[in-house]
Image 1 (tube, rainbow, N blue to C red):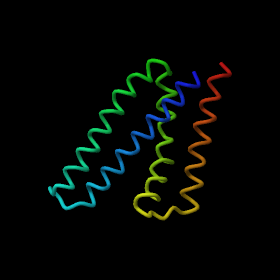
Image 2: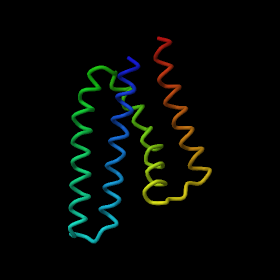
Image 3: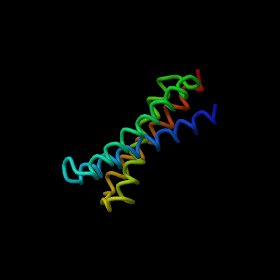
Image 4: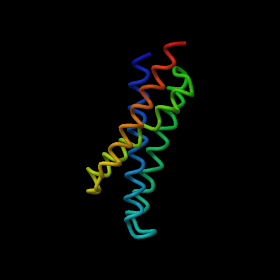
Length: 113
């Protein structure tokens, strides 16, 4: 079961990378070659994500899988820092920590039943 959750989170990393491609497309001139390349990259990554998502929800309850999806907030913030030099305020970090703690609490609450 732990292996499935690790796989799930790897899938969410892939999913969050589609946001990087989308932002790069948005920063490119509309209908330019780079716009199409980045947009196609985003669609390609989302296709990989969709196939992997279907495989993982066979092993994990759908409610748990969707609850864990909010971890992409953390990954999107990380990609913003790495690729776009985004400034992350203390409040955004606190918010991301709260989201992660919520995921952990939700995941452990299922074990009590």
